[in-house]
Image 1: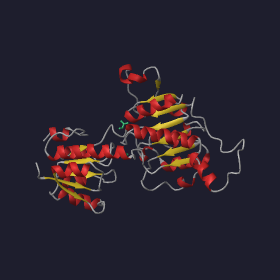
Image 2: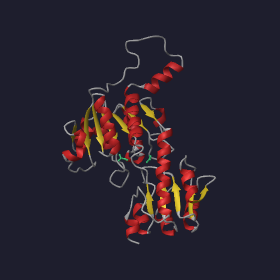
Image 3: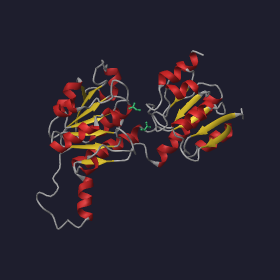
Length: 332
Ligand code: GLV
Ligand code: GLV
């Protein structure tokens, strides 16, 4: 089929452009569209599939006016799309799971290590000429080996993080669906049976030296970590977030870091990206990365391939390899 029409809100790497051009016509935005622009593109009737980024917000208004068959999101997450509204309007959404799991778990460990051992602060110390020689008490940090890592969530990225943390000699606790719970069988635990401990959310919060978030953003997880949770954490604990910013009440986090209610935070995501909560960037006990969990050359290429495969399938009226809401088409 050569009449498929694709719209990319932002250029994405090869092999996506080649795969998409082989299947149809490709239009790439000069500038990422704003909300009104996105609505217009979706409603124009000129495109079968929109290839989108996390910053492109598909709300019920955009989706009810849209004349597209699918949205292929260049991300594993899809909190930028109102999935219920997409389903109700017969619009399929695709994502890119699996290929960024290890890279994101690597960044989780990076943030644990860098925050615990004050790597960014230490680097600045040296570069600004303050290093005058070895000192018994220079830049002392927190232990990682032997400490307890609490994983909020137990999906792919949490499990890949557990594997790394076990190799570092950490004790690993997990709560599969915070703030609630659900049973996890030994079969589901698989290679982790006997190695990691299932706890409830309250225990995870109070017992962890490192509390790392691996939940999707939804109504249940928005502000999962609020002022009360921060107050319940150990004063020596470090919060790690490579999931989604709004899972944490960022203003409450700044207050907790300032007052010493917790010891530090390593973040790759923010509540109102790309903006940071006032005061966050001034805190020395933080390591702040600009949402780079999946940012390696090979991972971004794999994401591009999955994204294009999803888009081509949707344009050709086939179920894509990674549908988020397959019901959108079943109910047509
Ligand atoms: C990144 O945050 C993603 O969801 O892929
Ligand atoms: C995300 O892809 C996860 O399942 O952790």
